[in-house]
Length: 239
Image 1: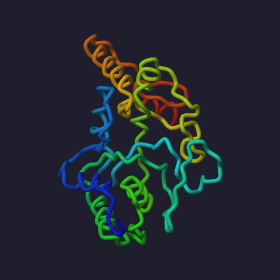
Image 2: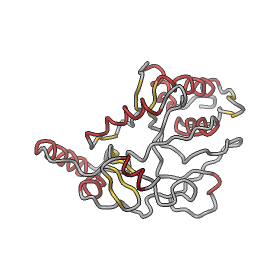
Image 3: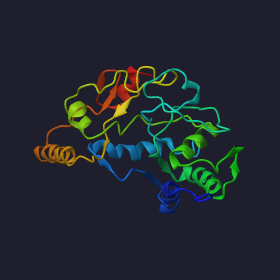
Image 4: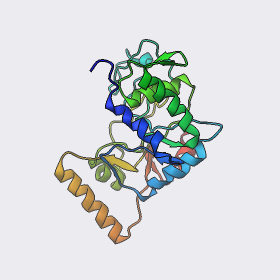
């Protein structure tokens, strides 16, 4: 109804009420497919600090920078707001990680949205979901850190790309001309849950078999047609 705050903002409210010192917000249909996914929590402790008090989101496969609206990109999805701040980084997926240092930032913008007030000159009453709120807020406050796409796709990417070590399509992997002209870097930590029961059953079967066999896990990090054993190796190759 008019004037009612969409329920999606419960996501930010849950972060604030959780009182966690460090955490990651995941969509309810996400499946963890790599034991190294816990490294995300350690890296969050390192990156979200008194010097950088903002949550960090993974890069979205969609480019929503209003400046790219007329470029004809296949992964461009229109976004505009009346008084949008200038984007400081690629649109992020609404699954932030945070430490307690980022809680004042999220409380500031969540409170503004719940009350319909402006914050730092930005109107919030027309923002319809938490992902948009966080992106606009991070742009406005000059944030600059994003994770690689640690949920790069649906279940079939687990066996077609990660296990097979086959470059995911398209190539470049969801690029944009400013931040990722050679495609977005990816980490195969999670995949989206599947509506198709067969794909989900196959995913669970492969995971169970791999864990029981004790087999080593393939290289989990990908960028520009190459897999890497660590993000550090990826960064050295593609600074």
